[in-house]
Image (cartoon, rainbow, N blue to C red; front, side):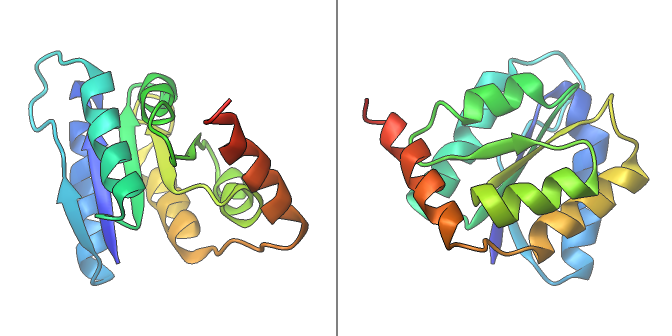
Length: 146
C-alpha cells in the first residue's frame, strides 16, 4: 500500500512523525510536500494528494494543515476523493467503515502527535463495511456528476 502525504507549513512536524510510523509499519508513501515551515497555500498540496488517490497512484492519503479543515475541503474538490477531517479514533474508524473515506485529514494545531498517530493507525487498520453503506457512498459519488 502506498499513502499520499501532503501538508502545509503547520503540518510539517506532524507529517515527519507520521512518516516514522509508516516506515515502522512497512508502508510506502509519496510526499507531496511541503517541507518548509514558511507560509504556503494548502489547496495546492491537498489537491496533489487528492489527485494521487483519485488516480490510483496511492491507495489512501493523509493530509495535514493547522485545523485539517481547509486542506480537506481542497482535497474533496477532486473527483473520487472522500477526505474526512478526524479529531479522534472513533471518527477515523467510522469514516472508513461507513463512508469509505480514502483520505484522512488532521489538524496539527488541534490534535497532539500522540493522538494523531493513533488516529492514523485506526484509519489505516479499518476497512469499509460495504452493505447498506455502499448505497450511501454511491449517492455521494453521484453528487460529483450533478
